[in-house]
Amino acid sequence: MIYRYITVIIALSATAGIIGCATSNPGIGIRYLEQKNYAAAIVQFDSAAAIRPHPQIYFGYFQAYMGLNDYENAIKYLMIGLSKFPDDAWLNLCAGHWYMQKGNDPRKALLFYEKARKARFGRSGNIMNRKITEYIGIARDQITIDSLENNLKE
Image: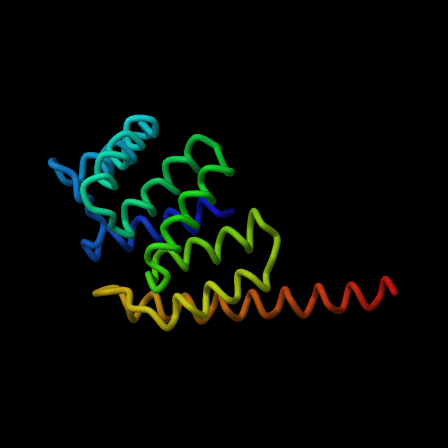
């Protein structure tokens, strides 16, 4: 299910023109991602990060490692990106999806979704703000369900 969200994020990011890498040849990492050549994409993101770190490089790392089913490195690089760019909307959105789907922690997801809502999404902002509001509602609903289930167990 996280792939569905990531696909939406990729499509909206590409439409808004916000995915770009600070490599000597911009966009190569993204092209490798599109071709599902994840190992080559990671090499490009390594080069880009060494030249000039940018939130979208860490977004790219996340996508590449997810494509390799290497969830440990996917979340590692997402968290590195968030430590460098804590107010980046796309990184916070990905972290929210991660914790809703793979991390199974709607409370953490809610925190990241709320940070994403406060940030700016560029030209796709109106669409993303509506989606974020939906995600926040879903996270809150899941927190309520989890709470009710825990109460029934006691």
